Length: 413
Image 1: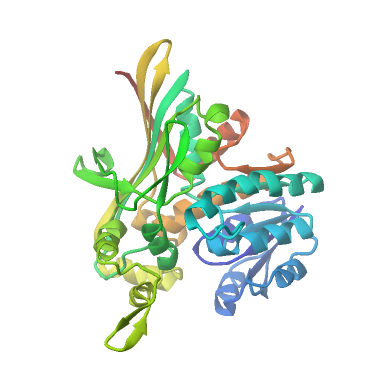
Image 2: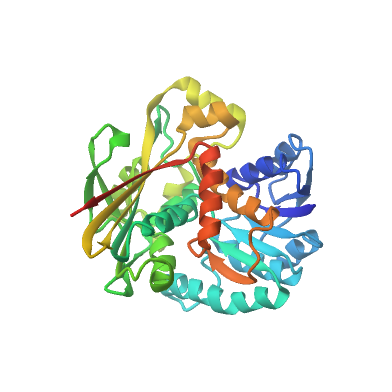
């Protein structure tokens, strides 16, 4: 019987907790957050839940609350990675998070901190978890997470790989103003920071909203849409692991489009996503903070989501795709993998969650389930693209049970 500690009970953490509550091998779920209301709202619907107020900025509080747990799930924003990693090491627990943190190292350069931070996790924290005989898995939500497993599945159709392009297009749009279905702060930071691509075998910095591509996705009714370079984990992970897990891929990109991008792009061009203080009419302001203060938070409570659905939706769709090109049996091949997932209305009917919460939370839960079921046996730290082939099969089988299914098309070029 496992004892699970969840640090952060927002959209992702609460989804994982609710799924774990039904797992027979779970004894207790400790739900921790600084937001006491969020903890209370979650714990009252759990049979195995226990709530505790914890300040995630204080590692000693995390360590105190997480004593004796088998797994520490970090569902906090990126800036809390180091605190949670260190806490998991201190209490000798396994570790899981939803995306690579940004505070593991500090070079003074955000782009380098991110790329080198992943490398530091592999090396520095990999040794620490291995010494404890424990496993850490980083980047286990929807993207990264599900996207990494989908990309690994695509590699089975190739002998060698040249280029991989991960693409997300989000088109779930309510009638009310709600540009983001997850943390607006994280979303806007992703929009403003330089992105990472892997080109000609090297990680390179790319500009936000640059290098657009156009695609016609059947999920969107065949409408042609535009996607852009975007700050995301996949090119970092897959670049480091290109030879071992991605058939020697030389070029890897993450492209993003949809409602949030359409909202943020003109703000970025106008300089309104800058975090540098400016003076306007004698008042000092930070543009990023001004914009953020006017964006509503993502809905996470049942009544909030129901109200949005009752008001009506402009659209309720999206696309989640991995494209890969390479060679198979000496011939040039194109692999096109699309994931089908519930939209807002279907996800809410299934679980009382938004589509974003459902996909990201369920994706994360499946990695937690793998811990609970003893599927991770190799000590150290891995990112979610580094599963064994058996683990990939297990994950995809469990994913399909949740209504997250793949359509794989392979054709010769």
